[in-house]
Image (cartoon, rainbow over all chains, first blue to last red; front, side):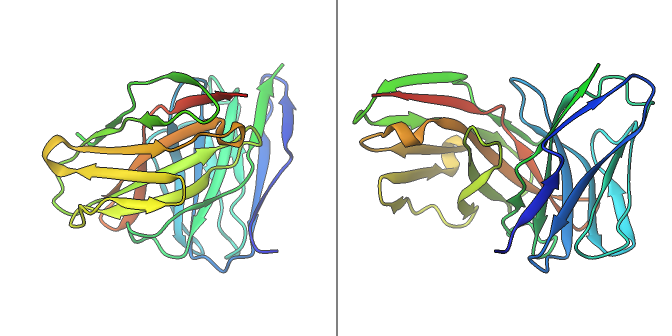
Length: 114
Length: 117
């Protein structure tokens, strides 16, 4: 089935550690996105990529890094510099980066700092 | 500034009741797109509808209907004869051009809909 796969579903991190969240899509979409969701808040854009080997910062990129070496993969690393990393992370993709294209979302990764 | 406001944090209804979820937006763009997404307990967001700023026709899809009014900057969502399976968080979103080219979705804070049997 076509779709977006995020792994793991739950992730626990000790303070000071970097962790990487996986996002893979088999929809042949050019654009991919990472959003962060906190309780009672909407989704906020962390990073986005319109094409392989290119990515741009979103509204809350500090403490995060990404790579886009393959069209189908857009991993997100939460670094130790991110002061409040506990949140629900959603990856999305769209056919293109045009504003009228719908985004498809993965099932998310819930990250908890212990 | 671009902004989406969903003033209703939580709504609780009994099955078969009709319910309307409100969405008010702010934008400087003349061309923009509005979306509704559903987030069930599983976590993923499910696309429901897209509406462009030039099309003010209301839309109906089964038990779902949407009322887009540019004069009041609103894009409200009504579920008729609600069912327990409709229980979810619903997000309204506005699409803007970001960084000169790329689509960026600005989300409201969501409305948690609980449908009681």
